[in-house]
Image (tube, rainbow over all chains, first blue to last red; front, side, top):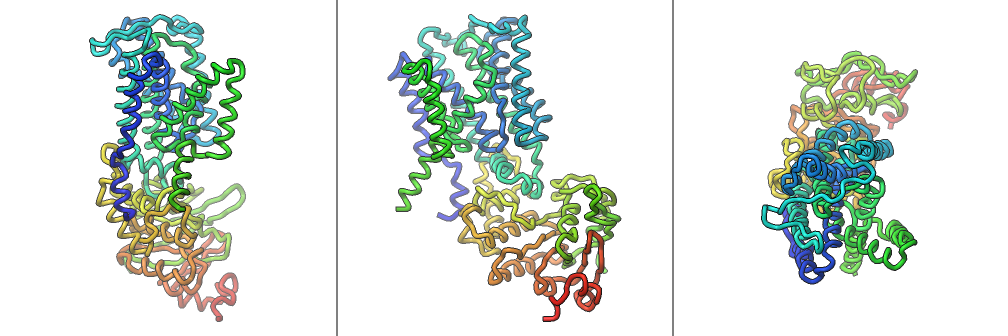
Length: 324
Length: 251
């Protein structure tokens, strides 16, 4: 196959792309008692997917992506708490808009910098928001957050299921699917191609006449909005929000997810989120006090032997296999 | 004399006390085949960086077709027709040759920001990029990533990207450096097929190539124009021979 046909067909759907969704539905029937855990995994996938757009595709290194997850989570929480606005779908839209706006504003300023400076500034932005959430107790519930939030039925039909998370799971699965469709469309578009150009060589991208900074700010804004949706889903599914949605632990966690799965690969978020959360779940059960050691060892192994994550490893093995 | 396409007036650049461009008054005419030569450290690349907007001048101006573009950012100058290649390859190393050229073509066509349509469905972009790749004899490598190519072949991708921008002014910073001599004709052929009204300014150390290609030569020494003229005039200029050409022309 020529390079031109290959490029022309790159965005075509492959049969195996159905697998994650088939698996998602299968889990619903096969593990009815694990749907709460499954819901958290799906939310993490969406969050990691939003990070992949900026980090994996556009090459913007950020340590503060949880800022937008947190903004989304607090937006629906505060709307429900203070205005009694607990309709879930409009909540998602509001969360996307608020997180997107903060992404736009902070990206506009921060994306003038890069490298370590950018890393620190994204971290600072997140910390500022975290402290705002901590200190604005009258609005945010401060350190305790907002427990016991309730949301109205999805589309007026499906009530949130506090015990088994059945409706939450399907709701989050559908939202994830829609957001994934958007991300997939973006990464295979000319816009997505130009993002990889920005990642690969900034100097050259300027020299072909691309409005580099505008593209960076735009993708940062879109990514922030998607992370905001993930945060909103967290609040709605769990019925509470607290400071843990917003902070270094969550920001580092999602980075680890992407590193484990493989960044810039669309499906790295899926593989990474499942791996990370299953590891966390099983290790913390087996070694309640030292489970992070296991996670650390896994990360070291990935950093040493599988720089491009599990998907990268799979690709390398497949290449070696076919070379034989 | 044809019309002046690109002009600099008193263009100067200092890094602290170091003056790397001293009041350069330079004219590039439409259709020019112009070479910029000079010893290492003469400020040739700096001059190109000033023309493209990668560097901001300390004084002076850059005028493109009568319009002062000194304050314009790089990308905007590219849109007005100034394209360049780099002395050291600046490519999208993890992407295929075809994608490298497609990115340039897509930006020129103004579709680089399109979100709703897959890049694979821009047949116009892919076809044009493929044509350029064929022209530079890179067809067999179109699907390979830049990192998998030998350096000389990568040099040709630099040229393909610049041509994909349909420049009116093409600035080539040592395009032949690193290309095996057996392949340098590919480069010359590509330049020869350019439309006649494009102005080409080439920095090159290979004097054979310079004298084969250039219709006019500017000699830059210590950031200032030292001499200008036709290849014959430059070759006959005793001072130029003394400071730069040395024995290079004797052989």
